[in-house]
Picture 1 (cartoon, rainbow, N blue to C red):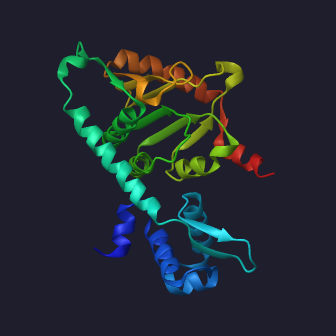
Picture 2 (cartoon, rainbow, N blue to C red; picture 1 turned 135 degrees about the horizontal axis):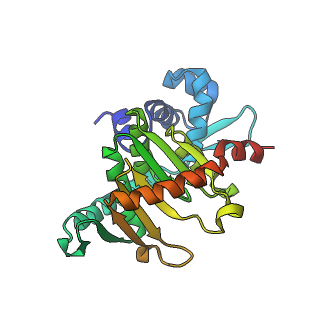
Length: 256
């Protein structure tokens, strides 16, 4: 398989793949060298290198002029292993007996990984609107990609998250999807961000996790296709949205 196509399948953009392969060929290199080898426009190269650094794929060296090198190519192997495990879990989830359903309107999904898979699959089929509350504590490339694809289809996506200075790289990845993201108003709505999501005003989820549940595999998600329940959560989300501030403003202030 073509190496660029392989890297794209592993989650990189075409420009990121070309820059990564240039570094594989050159070893530690300055931006000028990377641009010449990768044929990536110079005005894009710095942005691409920053994204690769945020993803942990490259590191910058403390020299002048600044040079970059590949950090640990084994990261790809680990990500593929995680993806394989997620697919195995998804197959098991799909094959679960129908007895877990309750009146065809509500059912239970157990475990954080299972709900992440459910969200990614749901976002593939959303047509108009995604509303979601999430701490955005991890860079979930599959979920990020599906959100990005949804926005490209014309879906209006709004997310509310908590803010933590240690999660800057994750926030930037989620902002790159095109979704609008605001920061949860703790003063008005309490210390814990409610883990809710509403999809096309017809489907919704409510997750019970940390701090009530300590282990991620014990997280419980109530998933529903009750329009009444979805409407109730949607109204609550929009009220929180109205009284929250843009994540971009938090990131801007964090740089000062």
